[in-house]
Image 1 (spheres, rainbow, N blue to C red):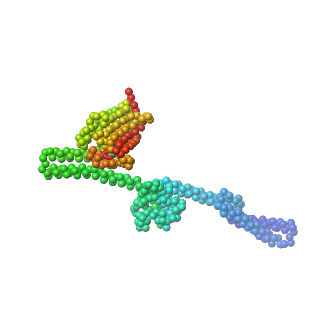
Image 2: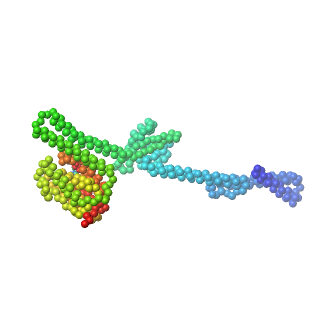
Image 3: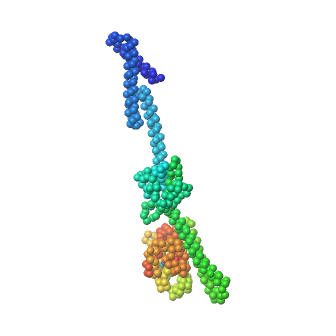
Length: 455
Ligand code: ADP
């Protein structure tokens, strides 16, 4: 309607102008014809103006720059306005959806799991950095590559070809550290039109833990089975053989030894599980180092007597100060668990007693350090330990010489207990040893757990 009125006004203006000119210039033509020509000219001018405006509108639309919209009148002005508003809204929603996509990708990027998006042809559309490091992918250069060409593990290849993605499979990953063979649990989740989501999860630690657990159970079973088998043998002998009193007593003594061995094992296992399952000891109970060392000394001397009788080390003078010496700063106090600290100290001193021949020497010290902490150290001139064993000594059931450990009543858990106790008290266990010359085990305690006894 508006457009018709506009055309009509242009026609009217054209007609009026020409009629006016003809009157002024005295044209010898019919006035109606002149008006018609004028109206036609008016339409032509209207067309020309609108053509020009549509051209400017087109030029602007081609640039796509909303901010540089031309200032147009009439219909084209309205078209430009509406288009600009539409473009603005479209840009706004495009920005918002781009931001949503960025946020979404950033969230997947932050995921500890690897994520790979595969198109219907199993070509990589996108992958996060975790997946890139799991599979050794390049997140930009490998886009559009077929996943089968890049993840070549045979287990993955047959999983992918079989097309049954109900369960995950475990494959070898491409860890950045060459020394560490990583293991990945991967699973494919189909979505959309033939697309696939490939998720990966580093299970190296989980597998190692599972291995450790199985190893631990096997070790415990083995440790218990051996004395149990011996016990069963003796019980059978007692039941079936016609033994004299001396033999019977000998058998009972041996049975007692096996029972003690199992008892020590169970007791050490319980100690370890308690240490692992409870929070670090508080620092509000102070124990005198002299009390701890005195108990430790008593236990070591009892062990010496015991071993002397059992293993024929009776040439050791039990109270001889030159074989087992204690030098301590007796005004020191420690904060923590008395039973745990005593157990750590006794384990180290007892080990020195057990792994040092009769003529050897053992020196125990407990002193404050310059930094306000303290250090407990046990040095012996025993058999010593070869360097390759040192890093593994605190592993449960790790023994350098299993028969020597067992015959002196070892469970293979002592140093694991010491390490736990020391760590729970904020300290550190250090070991140095020379094969054939002796060893030195010491642990430090931080200044927060050490003080001079208030007078
Ligand atoms: P065990 O009960 O077998 O002594 P530990 O955990 O206490 O277990 O010690 C682990 C191993 O470390 C021992 O089996 C032994 O081979 C070695 N070991 C520990 N202390 C000493 C030491 N003072 N001298 C030599 N070897 C030692």
